[in-house]
Length: 64
Image (cartoon, rainbow, N blue to C red):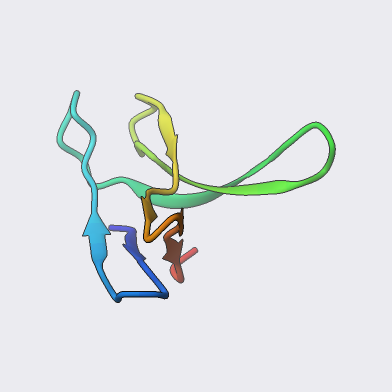
């Protein structure tokens, strides 16, 4: 399961898919301009979300 952590306050978050209950996994999405965005996605294909935010910035997931 992907664990996202705030580098400012240390808050951490785990997430599961609302449709099937599977733990979301960390992944990187490559945008058309070549930039990368960290996301969590359902391993069963139910979708993905951008990394959560805390303290005004994206939380980071160290697991790949």
